[in-house]
Image 1 (cartoon, rainbow, N blue to C red):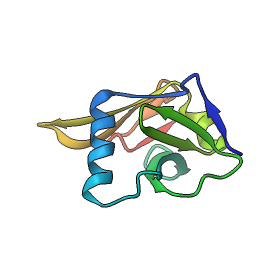
Image 2: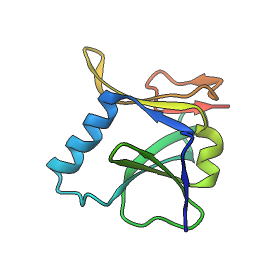
Image 3: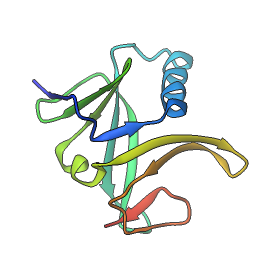
Length: 116
């Protein structure tokens, strides 16, 4: 069984939570699906963020419950994401999710990749 965290290794702003729920509703994503957040190699700074909805939680995953939203992170990604705040921006500079990651020592201009 996946480990459910009481202490939040990743925090999510109210704006991001609303957007996650909106996306689930608009795309008929089952309510029991979790938002899988991860890190993979690539991007101009070495690592990039990825996220999507997932109905399968693996035994090695960490599950972070924030209200009605479940965030699922694999162990390797969690190492890079501890302390990260997931936010959502709909301002003049663009619309999308923003990872405020204290572990990132460098980021690219688009904010989609980082290095440690």
